[in-house]
Image (cartoon, rainbow over all chains, first blue to last red; front, side, top):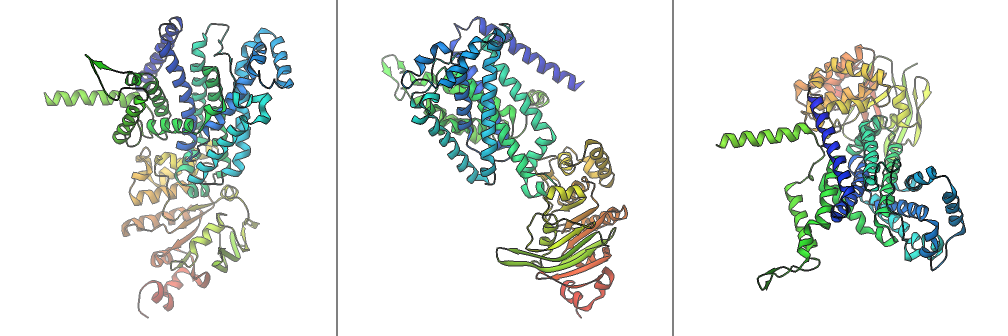
Length: 377
Length: 237
């Protein structure tokens, strides 16, 4: 009975979300800001969940997310920039003949192949990142805690340096970055408008990560997080599971990076600097380390607050003739930081702690509030 | 032939000799105990059998097969399992999750069977299957650690100080469980500082001092031994 009610609630909420997104797609002109923050939020939700898989569930403190995102973003961008824009994008150094040849093949392929090609590009970006993670993991996963963080941070910087180096001018366009990247593609022959694409891709990825966490592999990840030596004594292969978590996390970070390239339409190596990793870490910590739903919730809250709700503080404000001091460009970040401190002080373990969202708890909380109010009256 | 044969086991930690070439046997379906003071090398012995510590020299035979140098996972698969010192349950996972991790290498049918067996031995674990292991009492945590090890369907269970930090009544419970497990056919290798209880329970006992085995014999006999009485049991000669 109870399970039925919860499934019903979940299905209703998802159905309402889909209806809302379709409505948004039809009226996207009037709601530009909302569309923009929701898409950015959902992309960051995927990175945050993939970082949480590594940091929160496996206990590996890694700061390499931005590096893997840039691998995904560059791979996707290079693959999907249309042939006719190539010369415009690579106007300084010319494009590598191999890339041009590949694009000619794709451009000549049947319409069906072309319609799924952006998704193939996302997948290839993910696989490339996963491959690199598997190789690098051999070396860095021997390290623990802070040392692992430093090594992965270094890895992310190396990736950035390689992508912006002059030797790769004809592939990554060096320090000029890539632009004219097509936006999100439509799905299912236009039945699903392009606005919904990132939500659907992220949805699939998050469901996969949730299934992984709830499998016996996920239990082994948590055992490693709790106590490596005890886990090893139980017969859990430490290296295999750490590596698996690292590879899966990198794969999904790269997919999110590819989506981000489609969202931003132009990328450069600097986009994926250390600050981006910190932004993601912030989302994970605010949401709760070890909570998937917490990461998703916090990705939206942080993105929307930072990009939209607090914009108001950046504009000069007048009361009659008196200009309120401090209200100028950049002040919103001050308020944002103060809010973060308040949130962290109130919710010591992040918004969700290490628990997942459940209807029972939410409804329980409402009941309790009602009862206590009744008692007071 | 004994089930577990340790021959000239030597282990060094960065130049410090922890085990100085010890040899002992564990016969099938027996309870064997290693007693000794802190730093005698008891824990190191168990950890090296499990493949958690590299050996300097020596060999470990299990069921006639040389197991030193094998991965821990393989050793667990062969039926040797360790209940680590200080319980080391996974504090932020539930009791049930802890048990399932113990049965990690089992297929789901064997896991279910092992789980039912563990619940039969420790009804309290079933009552508290939803509770986070870190919030269990010390005694229940020790039961969980033993239950978790039993989930691997072991032939030999090795316990590192199961009585550590527990009230005398709980210690009694733990040892009656150890006897019960043993009666079901599981061989037990037990490390204890609480020499009195350990020797009363064990079929065979070995006394360790600073990396060497200095004495051995049937448990009851060691209990009567005058030197051991004065050194470990605090009784006058």
